[in-house]
Image 1: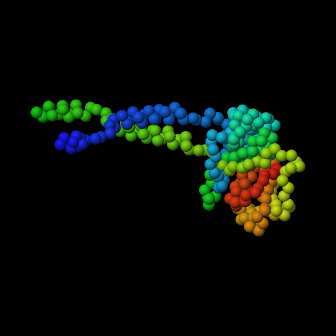
Image 2: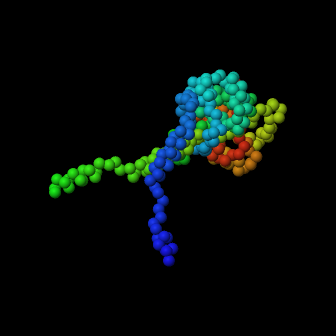
Image 3: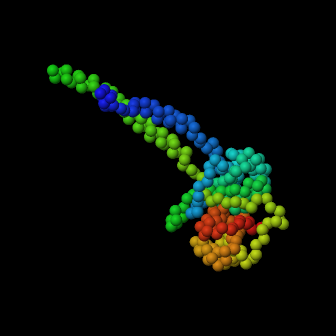
Length: 139
Length: 139
């Protein structure tokens, strides 16, 4: 009847290495974090209630500031060249979504010209970045 | 005896507690996992019509069209009548209820500010209108 004795032995999970595991994961996640490497232009986004989230991986940013300067991939481009540039970008990524990070005081004409360029390049999925507006809150 | 006891106590305390290192590590770990999830891509998504010839762009009967016009002074007109930004949503809802073939056209003057156009687009989205298109006033 020696069976009982052996089962009584206390079982435990060793936790002393938990900190090591945690640090390992920590280092892994710190290394793999990708920070956006695009500085863009300074813009104040408009506010909208119907805002939704966009897929970050597919998004390609177009910054347009108050003065109507257009920045794509940290390059200042003229509105006439947007079509060409986007054509190249959409062949690299056919599911690309173009996100407009446009200042709320930008004249609409500039945005319209950029959109014409996008239509030319067949980059039809667009996204107007906004700040979230809480319903019922005045702005 | 009193002196000895004192010494012992001092020796026993000279140790950094390591039990909470894993807690600290996990805290940092959670922080680094959650941080990239925080999406700054919030906005309104839209599909542009893409490359179209003048001939095969969709023709819509005049009576099924609701035009929201933003002029260069920032005034909003709904079918030619001045309207408040907040009333747009209700006006479109009524229109769509009366005629479910209604297509909303958001026509913006190139000199109008982008923020106003987004505000109107927001209202159109909130009204639940399925068919709408953007247009730029031709000069």
